[in-house]
Image (tube, rainbow, N blue to C red; front, side, top):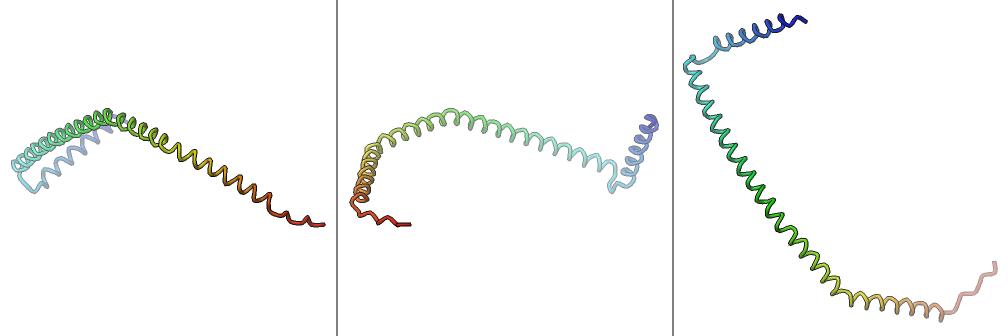
Length: 123
């Protein structure tokens, strides 16, 4: 493809589009320029507002991260301590339950030994 012809076609298309836009514009050039200037100022104000909001979000995230760095390890340690205390507090109950289970198993074995055995089938 010929590059010169391609770029000439693009330039002609842009020129024709701009001309058509100017000729079919519903307002005068002065009004259009004033309108564009207002839109530009509005866009700049919006961009500044967005920039400020982004700054606030970044600051909030930074504070959240710092707070998490300080509080999460404390909470984790607290949970570990509480879990250890709970485990320690249930140990006597655990041992008592294990002893009771052992006694129940012995009682079941004793009952099985004391029951009459069914007669063996002659098959």
